[in-house]
Length: 398
Image (cartoon, rainbow, N blue to C red; front, side, top):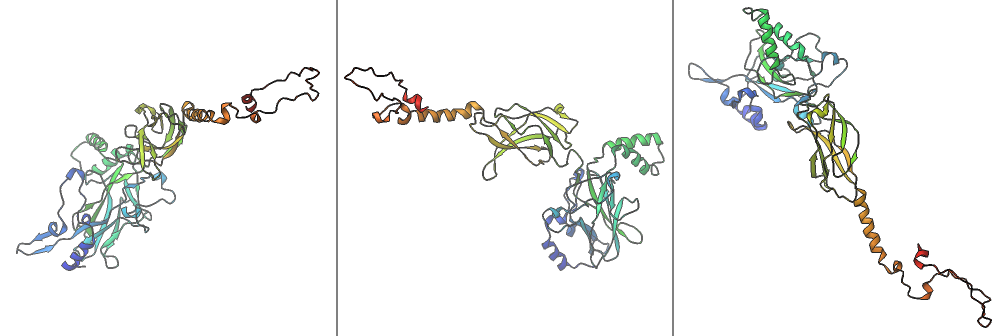
């Protein structure tokens, strides 16, 4: 299918500038030219024509669960496109072959993060039964040269198996060195491969000769959700959800796997509008992260250590390297009795100065009728008046 200049211009206006740049590995930080300039071939007679090239229309999601082969029983989620998080309709990593009119095969396989070499992990398709480490699709399909790779997953290769996998790969190619030396080189090579990050490598091939039609393109990195460096942070259990505002109290939490050198325990408070108005970190040492699953830390002091009422705040895990955080848990700072009761004492003191509690009497009618006189009282007979007990009005009131 040919592409005219007008079609290419109209298509370029509808796409973001990033779609015109192929991914460049961090070890090759060289700016990429746009296809209009980079994909021109000058012939001997001085004429020029457009050269076929691949471009990524939909990048894969940044984080994905790499699974071991033993975990593949049942149905698991497949690798989606990055825009699926903001789009109701699920999309998949998609590429387009431009400036090509014949039939071709577009292949997708895993590549390492910093080099274009093949990654030890395996890319598979849900309906794929063979042991191939790539997924392919024939174009044009329904008259277009765009391919969406759906139903793909990533099988994690154990670290201990990587040197042997590399040895099998290079044994036929490196016959001029001994097996012992090759094993040593493969072991050293395995140490440099990041098993927690992969990229997708897309390549276009002639359907009959398997010759590459153009240079391959590489996707943005995909991070493993099984890794402590990129997994979802989660607080599973917490020993206590309240503490003193002065801080310094021990708290035990059980968490998902974390890197002891790349984790923080953050306290924060929200105002009525949901804005953070106070933050502080719990204190702990790397040795307090037990087996990478539990952390013992001390609570930080609240911004006001003399609070008169309880204050609700939140606690979360935070990873400084990528800024990811866990779902927050509620935590309550309990007011000290000495400060919470001081307000009550001040209120009682103000009430004691009121006329009703001062003990002063404005008239005899305010005196409680506690005295019972003898009805036979007679001054003339000089009969002695019975003794009566006079009570303090304040005592009676209390």
